[in-house]
Length: 274
Length: 233
Image (cartoon, rainbow over all chains, first blue to last red; front, side, top):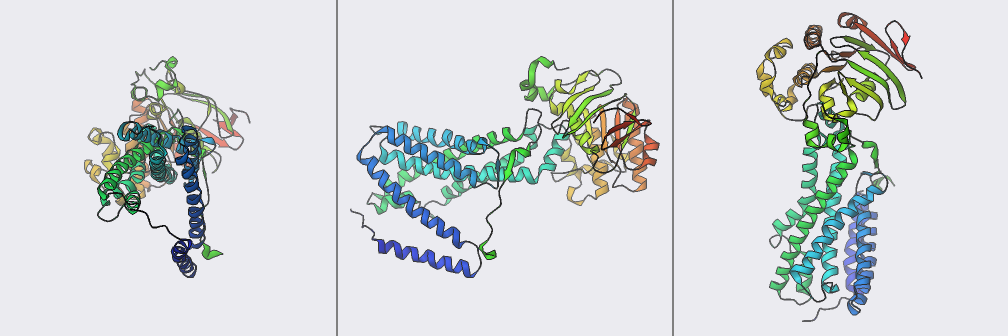
């Protein structure tokens, strides 16, 4: 079954809904109009761009360009993790933690899936490797960013309690045990919720895409189950690595809380004040 | 005692933090050239069983001095308690030995007893001395008054059996009756266990009651006893 192609008019109709939402946001002073516009523009440009890139990659299968694209995706995801935090580490570590954690988790899980589970020839077949890596990076990025933001914010707000625990002779690991647990839970919650409601409340995007593309629904479901498991494992490993790494950066070898290693940015102000 | 040559990796490890110390009699506290946050160097000595008062205007760095002495802030200089150098033991272990009572105490769990390693081992006479009984372990933290929190913080500190006491205005939030109870308990602990004690207070009368000697902290440095300038700056 062929996919019915969408015309620019079809997309413009969908965009008009966002325009309506933007008008409502402006009227109700929600401060979301500018963000919706920028996000919609980025989605359009980025997806059109990747569409052309993927067409080229599918036509000329070679590991070099694939690796280049994967590295670009990773670096951008690392930057996204950093900018989504209210407080982040100064210097290169702020970017390195998110990027490193996603490299360890997303790349290793994607490699495992491509080499062991799917087993295509060649194993880096772009029709499989790029979508899987993209989905893993996207979801891991959300989990890692949420967990790190929760961790740094909680450390900042509860610094007196943490220092009280250190004064009483607890180690750094003991003093932040609850905060670490909550941060990891925050990072994992979106994918756990998504898995719990998949098929009942929501039809996941990849599965929907495959069905729209004409695949057998049962084949699409099996791939979706695989992807959900991979995302959950990738997010879990990535979050654990990021939080542990972050913790080591915020305490020194004398178990001193080093919040001066954090820097903060102002949250975006609402457009109500414009 | 932990051998210094094991390095900081060992002292950061769980084993390093759990190491137990063999104590000789009457450990004294010696601080040499202690510098922190552009302050210092501070040098002084407190004998075992001696209580030294520390006073000075707000903002002169009394609380910062105590923080540096338990290694909460970055510092240079050496500190010795008995035969043990601060840098030779894991920081959590040093903090358990050199007990600090901050000006404000914090409680993060639901009940009082959960904040102790083992509440059943808290001595009855300590609880009674500050007006509590053993049921206080079940009290809900959110219902404690400021004064109760402060008195319980003192009990929590002593439960660690520190070999030195650093007290940052321990009676600032207490009524006169409680002040007497706290003074009596802390003096008794200092005397019976022969531990050095540094007592920060803005009340000259209190320092006169509890201390053998007094330090005066000024922006220029630390004045010891009758105005001898101990350190530079």
